[in-house]
Length: 243
Image 1 (cartoon, rainbow, N blue to C red):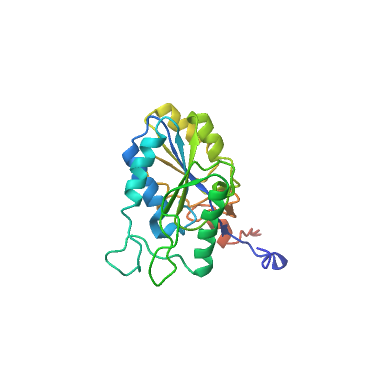
Image 2 (spheres, rainbow, N blue to C red):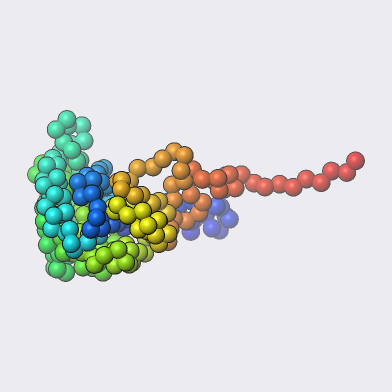
């Protein structure tokens, strides 16, 4: 953007995210766990829409965590071309170190490692799929993008508190909620400060017929796959003709 500004070039930026999955007390926990695992650890957590936070109601927190930890423990780290591996390496050594440093700092600030938490064995930039529990909602790891296989679980006291925590970050890429109540679903869709919203499904995955977009510091310029890109890639002209 800075490079293009002196030349008056248009810029379209798809930026980072700190995406949350909200798990309310009436949620289908099995579906929520599968969505969280897929969203947090697919592509080793290295995508803008990755699930990096789960905000779970205290009423079902322990039950949810038990199921989540059991599923994450099944993941096998290894080379991307290995048939046995379910999660590959991060992109480089710097990203691996950043993930491990973030986990260490989170523990110093009160979070606890529920599973993972270290470097996985092997000749590569492998980070263990990590779930952190009891993460303070305003701690650094709950506010800043990690871009790796690290999932923070944050407690909440009901729907309003879950929405407050979800919207507390500077990013707004995606927002996801698990609940069985239709009224709560539509209220959440109205209150999420995010561009791509999901209900009772994973918070990742783009649809070709829907715009790919963020809010707040997750997007600059027109969304991809939206009607607005016509104006971005073309120039308007006017013509006056005398007969």
